[in-house]
Image (cartoon, rainbow, N blue to C red; front, top):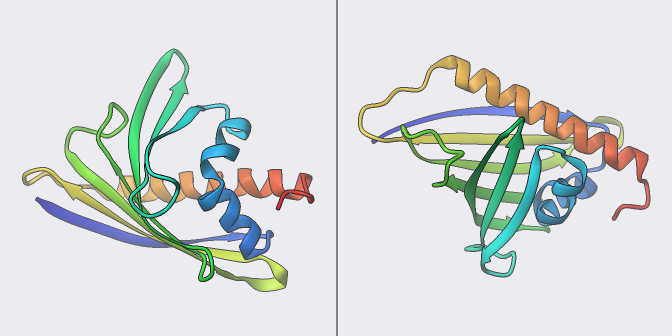
Length: 158
């Protein structure tokens, strides 16, 4: 098994506590409502704490796929959210799992910085190319901006 990792930061105009809540502790409720591609987020096991397993189902065009997410750590005081994606039809066959270690920090002008470390655990001697890392950054930036737009349009969301 190989392990490949990269780090990136995404900047947001939204305060850290609001961005964290939307992306971590309220992910399962909020994202299916505001992201068309996310059909559902179901709790398979747990209560939202570390060890909880979620099934995330995506629909893109006429194709539906799912993956399992396991919450590895959740710390609302320090705005840390770590999880793994494993199994399902949404994870390429060459990957054992992907882990995400995320912290949301105070950013400029009342905004926030979402720092993420992604680790790919590959099966056998499979490799990951730089394009995967670039696409991850693009998707993460897009998701943060999408959520940021929702939060800015809904100032009462707490």
